[in-house]
Length: 160
Image (cartoon, one colour):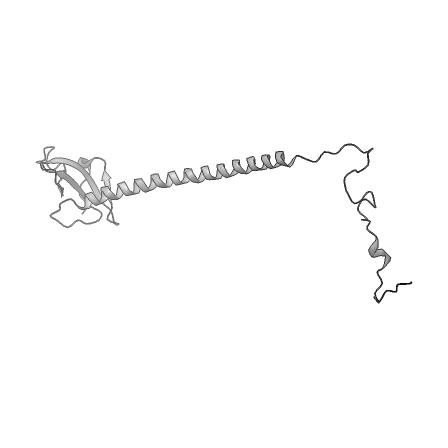
């Protein structure tokens, strides 16, 4: 009995050739030596390799997270400083004042016996060193309505 192929397409002989022109040993399916006479080949222990990769990944991740943690701490410190400055500014703005404060001028802060604070245009020098209340400092009102402390109130006069 003869079997005839009903397929009209014939497979060319070159398609059946499994040799790789780049393979140094044509006809072999492995790029590793497979002969008993070839030097012994040991596959890398994947567990050891995976352990090293995980250790390096862990170290890199820890270093990056450590950097972020340091940045967070710095931001928290900056936020605390800003909040403290805002509280101080608010306390200065809430001090009693019987006149209109104008930016660019220096004002002097005094504390009464009951603890209340108030602004005055008179410096320590104007009181000849003996003010009627405790002197708490001299400050310049800036254009943005923030306060800048003045180092030596006796040497600064009010700006006109």
